[in-house]
Length: 104
Image (cartoon, rainbow, N blue to C red; front, top):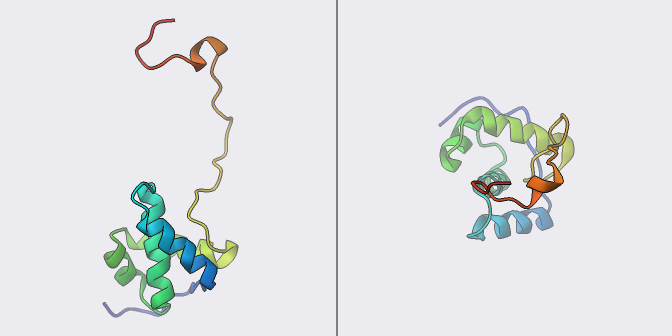
């Protein structure tokens, strides 16, 4: 899929590529981490690939590819989410150990 040259072209160290390969192969890895690792591997293999082509290969939306490219250029390689803003969830001590459906 030809297209314009991507504005953000992250580079990955050999250690980061090994980490991405490990995450992508791990059957118990969360799906969002696995596709991010596969995306990093695609970009490492072909840095000039267009975002629509990378999105098609990995199976995500092209805007998602652009977002992760920009983040990796600015902050380096990571598949983890950033902390979300807002107040952390809090539970009363009586509900912390309770399972869904249990009565307290």
